[in-house]
Image 1 (cartoon, protein in one colour):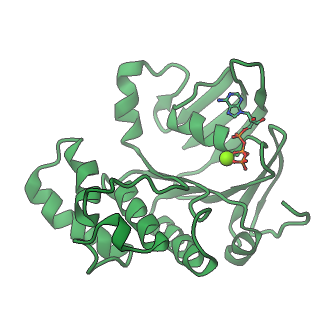
Image 2: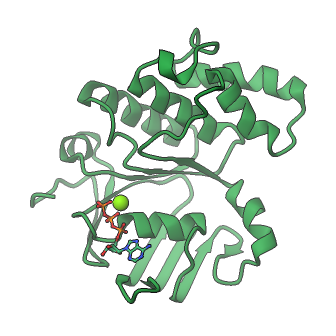
Length: 228
Ligand SMILES: Nc1ncnc2c1ncn2[C@@H]1O[C@H](COP(=O)(O)OP(=O)(O)OP(=O)(O)O)[C@@H](O)[C@H]1O
Ligand SMILES: [Mg+2]
């Protein structure tokens, strides 16, 4: 489903953020992406989101060849992806319900479907009962669960999370990570960038380790050998 073939990424200032990535992720897989600061993890995610373009090599996601993808098709491609950021990025003046509904409105979903689907998604992320709250009225972990609900709103095939637990406490982190595992179990491909060694060890999923723009380890259910 996702294929990086000798992908390199140089930023305009000359920084070689990725130096030849070969990575295959099957549909329905769960993958942790780990590695030290500056290793290229966010760059890898930005290439997948088509926020940045590859410099050389080949990157395909499903039927989309991202180096060939024309600008007008990018919004259609992005609908296949659900994205969660470290800083949640919720609309402060919209309620929990409206934050999730908005993602559906922008792609033209009928109101009747929105009012059915939003409560169901909020239930999936254990947020029933908070739908009329505003972001400042709920905890950081709850805000991140709203972001997760929003990522799921348009039923994406792939969910990408870059440090989704970076701004929340350890107990909440466990809940977010458990939800991402649950989302994977309902059939979505899930890619999670994280520094949290304990969580990675706990879940025993595939771990792709990046170091200085290259994949240095790729293993299933393994443990970290070194500090990250
Ligand atoms: N827009 C940019 N322009 C130039 N260089 C960049 C840009 N974004 C990232 N870099 C550089 O590319 C390299 C990889 O950065 P990236 O953000 O992918 O790392 P990361 O693994 O996500 O790190 P962190 O764990 O700190 O988030 C770093 O050397 C960084 O300084
Ligand atoms: Mg990063």
